[in-house]
Length: 532
Image (tube, rainbow, N blue to C red; front, side, top):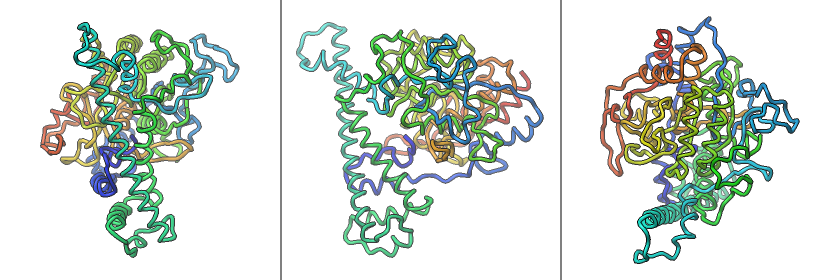
């Protein structure tokens, strides 16, 4: 989800609902590069990266660190990324051979576990739909009075749960499509009357609406338009993205009849299968993965675009996440691939509510940790308490033990006030480790362009970039030492923040949101690293 402020919770039944929702979730403005700025110097709650470079790292040498971005793909030709894209030193480009004998042919920059000979998976279901499809064959004609074994009864209850969840979500998405569609139709009528496809605020203010629908639409546009570059930018970010988001949910995410896995050509039932996919590390939509990659390591000294957190990284793209929920088999193989091919930090800006093959993922995480890899995971964007709800993958294994070299990241905003916790961010006193900037982060998107995105998906790579920065300048530190440094060096938050709990707002201590009770800080972390 690219803009939680606009797209989240737009469960719409009509134009009025949409208008009210959009006004309530207007985007937040923040300084350029704010995630790397310093609170005392710049008055935004960044992680003091620029201060660290200026005062602690000047003149010091570093070693390159390989960071795996397990995501939806990366634009390896982007002007601000192409210098930091990993080139597999043991693989010869385009010769159709597995030169390094790792089981993957021509994996020059990474691997795509959701591609195959037929192309690449773009859309997929959410995991609940896949579970529903699995259970339907067994329980479609079952009732509460049907005789079932104890194990069958457990499975039947799971079937009823996912069936209800999918039905509810599909209905909400259908209503949202109708609501946003209604808003679009009214707006397009206004544009026709104005005879202008890119009107200004003054044009809307002079326009005389004919009836309540036009009055409401003009009100929303007039209120929000000053926050965007122009009307076209507003329409793209607010209207078009919202419509596409919910339309995709209806057509693909919650459509039980849609299944794109045949494109991959693997034996999906075999979770031990490793060697499938293709070498296309960008895929059909590299927006999210490119944005994540830029936050981690976009070139800092090329006078282009943005500045990544780390200044000496290589980005390995491991394409695993479709437009929909990632699959456990692919996640497990992506983690294994990254760790086996030298990654020292893995960024995972994805998550879902079910993990039917968690054992495979657990084993892959254990493998990565055995290779001294630090795994960074986004906590999720549903304002959920992860003490109660789940966001997979998790560091808690099926046997109750826990992954050690793992950091769970929530998202923070730029202002040191009650809004410091991003409204959308998941949290958990014992399940989330730290918070990091994740609101209105400007970063790289395909076509050598740049855009603002928000989410814990943006906060996780801030921490992954910090981990890579530490490992780059202090290469002898282990993954666990780097984790220890990041957690011990946070800036503690000693004032209450606002937490939305259902329809109500309440004030809570930041220490109730995560283990450390603070925001990561590069300056503090690097000072601490120097003492290890």
